[in-house]
Amino acid sequence: MLATKCAEKLKTFSQGRPDLPYGGTAGPMPGMRIGMSTRLFLAILATVVLSVTLVIGATRWNFERGFLGYLNELAAERLAFLEPRLAKAYQAHGNWDFLRDNPPEWFTLLRPVPGEELPAHTPTQFGMPLTSDLTGAMLRLSLLDAQDQWVMGFRELSPQALRRPVRVQGRTVGWIVLAPFQSVADTGAQRFQQGQTHAALAIGALSVALAALIASWVASRLLAPVRRVASATHLLAAGHHDTRVDLENRTDEVGQLARDFNHLAHTLARNETLRRDFMADVSHELRTPLAVLRGELEALEDGIRPLDAAAVKSLQGAVSQISDLVDDLYELALSDAGAMSHKLEPLDLRTLLARVADTHRRRIEAQGLALNLQLPATPMPALADEGRLQQLLDNLLENCRRYTDAPGEVRITTAGRDAQWHIEVHDSAPGVPAELREHLFERFFRVDRSRSRASGGTGLGLAICRNIALAHGGQIDAAESPLGGVRITLRLPIERPIA
Image 1 (spheres, one colour):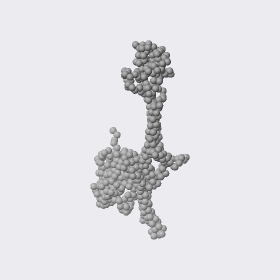
Image 2: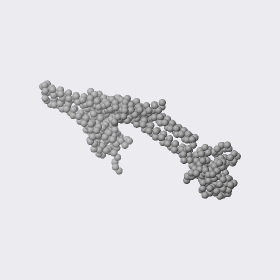
Image 3: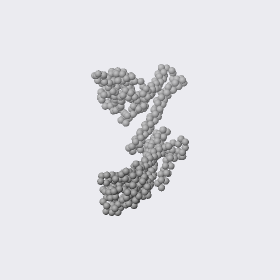
Image 4: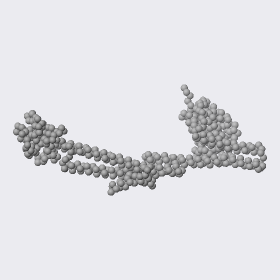
């Protein structure tokens, strides 16, 4: 039953799972794709089969060598039992002639005698034959005289035979020779050996069967979450950005993969939403000045409005609005692609801030706002592109002028902390709600769309400012200002003078 289940599992994995992604095709076909489950199953099964085969082979080889060695050691102990008996018999007869052609006498000497004191370490008891006798040790014993001439016993002598001297009064009068075991010949020993072999094969077969079941379970369980991630990847590639993998509770690599996948899907979904909003905002921003141009041109064409300076100025205003939007879009595209030109050079931020403030002061004060610039007494060295930083500061001050109610105040402060220059631009009311401030640097984001469009902004200025700050290795963010409006903080690395 177990082997049948293993065979069915192996057949299933070899044919693949058509109901799961990456499953193999059914039947051996040219170019057949083997799934990860099949590969993992076969790898585990092959490893176990190889290990079991090696273990069985090594066990059999070691057992045979050890068993034969054990038998030879038992037979060698027989020599210690025979040495004193043969020496005593030789001393009684004066030579070995009493044993020549006398097998009964020879076997009598080999057989234990009741009451005889045996040498130490001889594994026998009265009334029991030696263990080695069961293996035919007596039939492999030979007796040679002092001149190595055969006297009695086993005739076939080999160089590997064990030799023990027979001494009488310190003189060697003969040799006891024991031919070693070369293989198991006894029926009982053969049955024992076969039993061990059959047991090893049965254990090996059971191990392989269990390994097949475990390998199939591991392959299916281990790769099931991977298949889920792969299936979700197909859906994500097809444009289903709301696809998620519910495996984030796992603490292993698969859980990390699921978390990364969900983060990627969230990012793609957000980018797709931003792309659609961006296209909608661009078309919306272009529609208004184009509608003005079309209306003015139709009025001029129908003669409703005369072609005078006021009409030309109106047309130029609509064209200027389109031109500003196109320029901002171009700048934003360059900064997003990292292609915006930056020429970083040492400069004094204090001088740049003073010049930008003087440029905007008249327009800001004409709006009914006060411009307050607070600069340090010492230089503010930085490594930056002067033109790009001026563009950034122009955008910030222009936003303050457009979106701050009169009477009000615009304040610029500076400080050096944590190896960075902190340039803060404050304005007074109205402020921006906390939940909207984090969106100020997104493209086309406006707190009040109708008011912003009336003031002439494209909604791209702060997005361009953020990219300029990042290109300088700095940061820019928005927070609540103590003046009641918004505080924009620009952080730039401090350029240390070379000693």
